[in-house]
Image 1: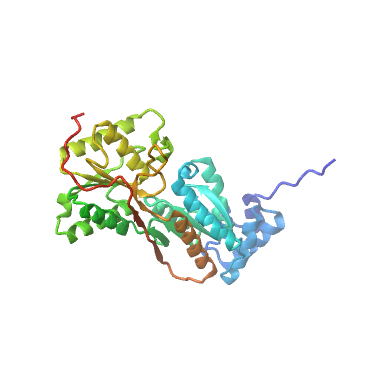
Image 2: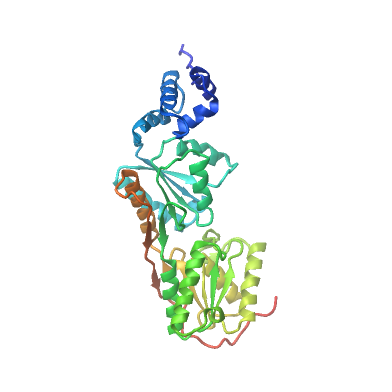
Length: 383
């Protein structure tokens, strides 16, 4: 008969054994500097002796006496749950995996971290992130990264381990795509085709990429002597109009939902109220696909009446022969993932000691949804 397994010691057991509070034990096992070295070493030693789990955290924390730590050769990547459905995130993941594998590191993938999330999967993953089982973290989330990074460092014991943020400057190292230059190139292309009134989709005025894209559009217009506020209209993204998972072969699969109908009404109202608009730059390729369907259903032809440009070059607009028609701003997403891991490992190994930002270039890819500007001969009816 197998001998019953002895239960692991708890944090209460450690506190009683060491004659300290449970909060002191917790702080010590996180490596918090508020616990003096002698007390921290005594608690770590007791954790090993009593069989407290996770032992990996305790072994790592012993190394803090020398301001160093036993490396785990494991790094974490936090992505939205849509990673499983969107090629955008799959390509980032692929680039990250290739570099991690090349350099002998494991890559732990987490669903998108959010501050004080009640989600059980995220809460279960946090000890792995915070108790020194990973050497660093890559996080994606232009809107949420600043709060998440503050939360991890201050409240969850992540300490000063390296963090790299994709698409946001958040008090840590960052990888940004050159959305400003990409939008500048797209607007220059449209201006060369004779377009003078444009619609630019954005997430909102505070979102970092939206600000960079607006800056690129404005710069191109100003260089041609055009007033940006008069010649560039903006429309905030609504509902799932950036989600490519609802398309198959460029055709929307599920029936339109209420969000789709509101987004379609907003676009057609904008086009009706501003008849000079002859070109649209979408937030991503899926947004362009949604816009294309809405325009065509309203009798507005692309590119005869309105030119259309996507972003990312991930989701095609296919013709009957399977050719991608969509003019877009290509973002090398595998290079983004690769650059994020490379920068993180440079921080982990001390090759780069300072925070820094690296810019990944974009490229305008001209296909068949842009054409010379023409005065529109049709306008959508009022909703």
